[in-house]
Length: 527
Image 1: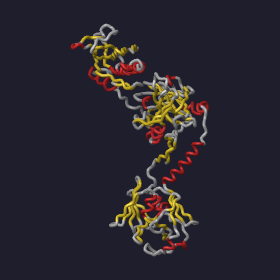
Image 2: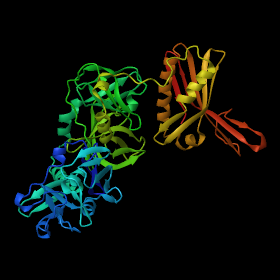
Image 3: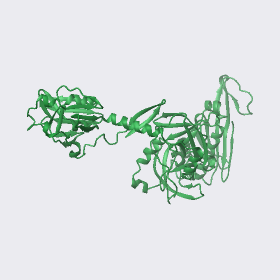
Image 4: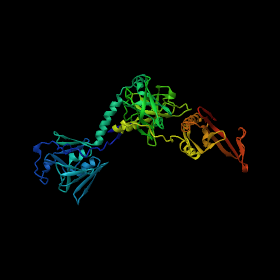
């Protein structure tokens, strides 16, 4: 399979080897069919029969249009054309070794290994035996091999040119280039659609996803299948898909996911009865191309925005499409289409508090691989992912509560970088409150506290809901504090926020987040 990718304004051929270039279990009749040649041109009774130089000189061999210079003339016996082994293997990009002791030819190219033995009508391709119509022969100090067998085993195409009495071979690479050029022509002739036309075609195929923990978007890719971000469905125990027409379909569970690329495929209990969006490889997108995003930012269902592809890059093995098309919280799992109406990405994240419109989608090629790996049995068995949190903390010791906080609430990935929370402590005060305390990374807070305030607020709110599920009858207070020591007494702080230490040092400590909840939630974030 040939994949074309636009890099730096130029198309580059990439080849995906599916199983093998040529299946070694192909029927011998297909692999070893003799080249058609005039019967009167050859007269040979056995592998040792003599062939005149004049007769042999008639036959030519061309590889990718270039005449192959042979160290000894090609010849034909019983309808099979033979050529010197070294020239044909080399011309097709393979290495070749002659083991004189065993009179064995070994050729290698990529993942293909071919072994032939002089006088033996059997070959081995990648440890699989294949019968030959004619065995390799030794003649005049030259080892000859059947040209069709070797060529087709290495993925090439072979044809007989009766008029020129020539064997014409097209290598796998030349065939791929030909296919690429055909694809390139098709790409240049693809129709372009307006934003309105793309919306008219795909709007109903984008749904809003509501889980018991989050809200996101999804793309219909099957009768009951929706493609979305992994983080939308992570830790969810239930979910519904809301269509553009107001229908609510219960989600049965997850049928496939890849946490690394942040993608998941979920299944609804009932058919969606919506048009499916085709998911295919896309490596032809270019910086500057126009794109259209459809999703449900902040719960505003099927909001449309457009922009450009700002960049295309890979990080940690994941290919991203950066776009100026605006997205926001809730857009996760939405669709990013190019101007040809093809799905090229799943909108995943963006930077807040910037005028640069820095938003990102996971490339659809990862979605293609994920969907391609779903087996029929797996598609029938859908279930929600096991929660990384315990089912309950009722009756748990304070040390167990601290462990849960350390394992699940010690970091937050923000637009400005990662915020860490250390030193989790759990205590019960005289008023019956469960008080959970930790310290935020002081450098992160000093540099990014104001810009990350909203993300810290949302993190604390989500944490509050999760703690309420784990401890539904408790009054809970979470205090996240800033603490740092200085060689001078900082001014302008509230009483009690600056403490004198020994050695002329001063400690600043004050709460950054104060979140309290029972049946309701109250939160204060200091920025």
